[in-house]
Image (cartoon, rainbow over all chains, first blue to last red; front, top):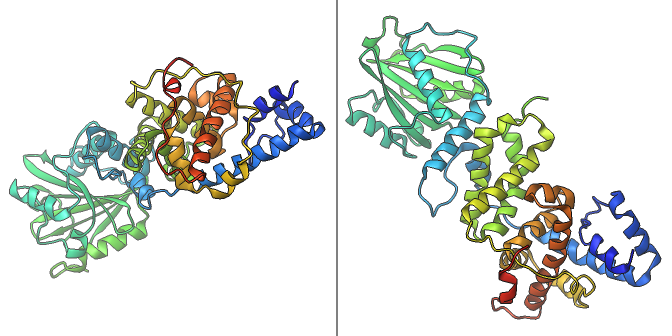
Length: 260
Length: 181
């Protein structure tokens, strides 16, 4: 092996020493040990490579990139939401909160035909990319107004300002037994993804109690259902129960009489 | 082995992926989009990959392919000899090592033709061996070595000019922008 061959080979040897035991480099490294000229070249090479690697590995990363990746939010401020980005958001949400798995309900499984079923099916469709939001906005208030303008439950008077200030992704209206069901997807205070589903209480044969949320869990998903006035509501999340309860306390904070 | 958790994967790789994307895409917004697109693809298709050990390669390969698909016009690979640079480490190596900062390195990398830039960035990120880089870029290992050799020479030339106080944008010789691998 000539020095030229050795230097060519050693040019692919990482400066952090990760390749030092690679037999591919052993002969070249042995030659470095024998040849002072080659050794000087190699030391200089290492010094420069180490400096470049250190600088590259310290290149700043956008502070919000991680959270955007995890929540599926838009990263680039220069490009509007593209369909691929929306799909990404949906897929990331799916990965985060559905655990990249099949949609199987094993606990508290609602009876077929209930509004929860249709809500879950719709969420499944959204999260897997088969269905799209009807409207998208980072503002819960905007989505509530959009729903209200279409005669769908919007909980306009029910959500306190702190909840309305949370970042939303989008909303969708589905029809169940002729009644509109509104679904708003947003991030809780801890960044967790939460869905709020609403339907006219009169549409339900057995609406959830007013003022006393009923908790449920289904294959890692957690739900809390209650009624407020004419509206039956359900929070759905994959977040820990503590987060669901914390969020619920925010939602219920300004509930009118009867909410405990 | 259980499928890796999405958040764990993001935490483990998003920084290096972003820096790889930054050198490829030549812009923070584009790099962030490229990183995001990569994780989107992971979220939508990555669950098919059951071997956790291959996640890193999958992500970097996917990011690179996404980049290429967005830049199909840059398919003309440079044809350059490798003889002249491997034995000509400049005497100014010390000045390079002591003078450069992260922004300078990224800026210099972004001026290098993509065919060298991708293996060079992966090399300096130190996440992969040259054989693994070859797998990520889907080229022979020998080609990676050649591109590293040539790419390093180009990078040092750019960095030296920067260290010499030349703040102007360094234009690469036209001959390096065309040809085939």
